[in-house]
Amino acid sequence: MLYWLTNFSDGGDVFNLFRYITFRTGAAFFTALIFGFLFGRPLIDLLRRKQGKGQPIREDGPEGHFVKAGTPTMGGVLILGAVVFSTLLWARLDNPYVWIVLLVTMGFGAIGFADDYAKVSKNNTAGVSGRVRLGLGFVIAAIASGIAAWFHPADLTNQLALPVFKDVLINLGFLFIPFAMIVIVGAANAVNLTDGLDGLAIMPVMIAAGTLGIIAYFVGRSDFTEYLGLHYVPGTGELIVFVAGLIGGGLGFLWYNAPPAAVFMGDTGSLALGGALGAIAVSTKHEIVLAIVGGLFVAEALSVIIQVAYFKRTGKRVFLMAPIHHHFEKRGWAEPQIVIRFWIISLILGLIGLATLKIR
Image (cartoon, rainbow, N blue to C red; front, side, top):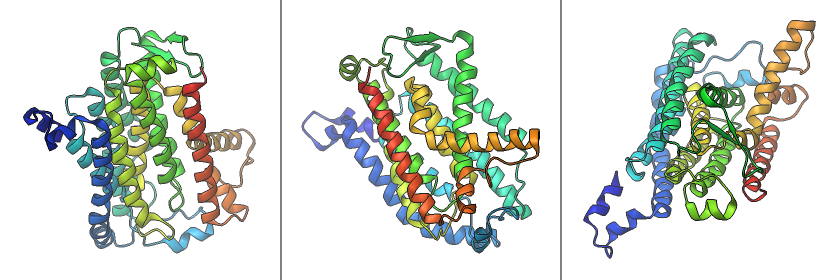
């Protein structure tokens, strides 16, 4: 929004600062961070009053989780408010990729909000039907993927780019949109599965988002794409403003979500943030790299798939409990120990993802 103030700039005044994406990125980060600090406590108090018993705790979950009973959920509202406000304030609103990512973020956030509301209002862990959630998610992802394919350069439309192999493109044709839908919905649900311990999901999300933000900035600049051998997607650099808002809002949330959590992000936050990661990856043509930088989320989702499939086939379990972070809880790892080790793994995966930009 504030970018339009550059229309009143003569090139030598303060309004000229708004032309620079680096300035607007930093401003978006601090705007979202301050938003989180200002509204975090009032929102938590409001959620505590409205929800009463807070987020229902699974009866078959780890025994240590019962002490968390009464903790309010829907804290993702704080992150979404911060990232949307900062993005609308500092990003160029004539950029289609910004609106694609915002559409996915808010759409999946609405699905998560409905699920969280159903859980707290009925005081059980059922929530909205899984089929309904998936169906709505695929509709949102289909719209976003179609718009992204429309705005991609002609030589990249419906193409799948591979990391490392700079000249290799796989033409998916009409299968690109279904593939992109799976990326977005899969990312949303993988982050949702990871959100099971205090602070576990938000830091890996910020690391993955930061990595994708750097990639978006590089991919959106012809000089960087020429030097690194990347595929140039004009306009995607503006997504780094969104990412800065996400990181700022995420840190503001983590202030209250650090163990012991004063609030859970709930499906409102996890589905929205995961969907945002998927939408950024689709926009920048780095869907495969998302599987690397978000490898922790992939592992969490695979642990559930493997557990369910193996149990249905044999009646036995591969893991003591799925998702896999609960397996380590059952093995006696302390919650902060799991969280910090998973953060370290996420950071390593993020660096590996960035390395694919140079290894061509």
